[in-house]
Image (cartoon, rainbow, N blue to C red; front, side):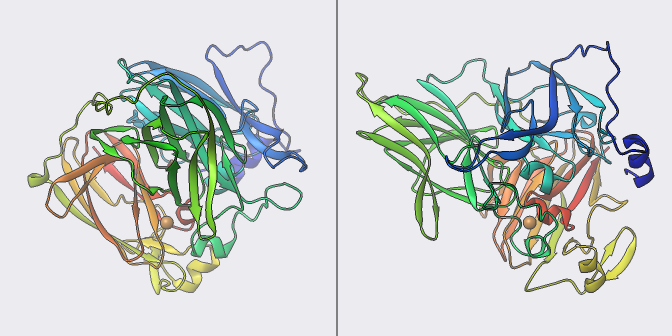
Length: 455
Ligand code: C2O
Ligand code: CU
């Protein structure tokens, strides 16, 4: 773990950022985390001070071919440590980007070389995993797309990274990152909704065009309820992983924080089509498509995407592990373990900690579970809180065990409604210490995280 002394030393006595040595040229392409100003608020408002990768918000969309090697250097030009997590990539543990677990934090003025192979095609994303409530909110995220060798035929392949951000009247981020209400309730919900970093994304299409829409929820805590208007089609992948069969995209598509959804849709509208998001007050355009006339006729439904490498889940011999989620507003914690000590709910709250998994608040010395590589695991998760949570497992995808004991689609992040119980199963094929945490980032910061050790 980062000690404060180490941090101050690295910053230098004056608190300035040490310069990178001159004349040293990075051999790898660079993602540079730094401060920049970007116009995100509607016209008439000022630009916004953000933290970005390579000056862009979201960070540059990184596109690779399946099986390709990813070798990029992350350089830190911020005044605070960072690290980058490649969300959903079944990666080598040392490359997972979790400071204090898989690597040392990338201190200001230094860099870290990420180098791994991309085993799976699909829609992924990358984001800071250091002080993520703040760093993701300030803009340190981007899309990571891995293309199939034989991709489905579409007229356009469009990535839509959706987010919400909490801005003041001056169009600047309200820096209340340790807001206790957010941490103990639904997390940090923003007041400005963004698509690819702007209030709205606009595209020009033709009638009967076929579009692949790659949806990514990069928000801190907002569960997006999405809908299609003038577009009709199928869900073909969730969290990067192809569905065995394309599934008709219904009226409401739920996308929890960190989840992705790949849609293949046909433009069926006349003049305009929309991806909408719904809230209590109505439906709003998240992306709009101006429709020109086309000559194509409607096509047959798409085939399933080619499957990614399979790590079969052996349900019959799986090790069961119960995970009890407790705490938060309206329920509270009477007491729980934190860093090897039993603390009362009040003592925990004073530290900004509100949530427990199996009576343990925050990552402790001991894993939730330790299993040998190749072992299958069943996690029975009970959400005994008054809030929904989006639980994410690093390094491996899991499937929900459905009531009839069949397995649902592979995912890396799953939403549990308040009071809900779900069972997940996965093959622990990837050795290392893998975080298992709520992707409502304020919840994670407030204790809702642990890890699973695969030896
Ligand atoms: Cu998307 Cu632990 O993260
Ligand atoms: Cu949560």
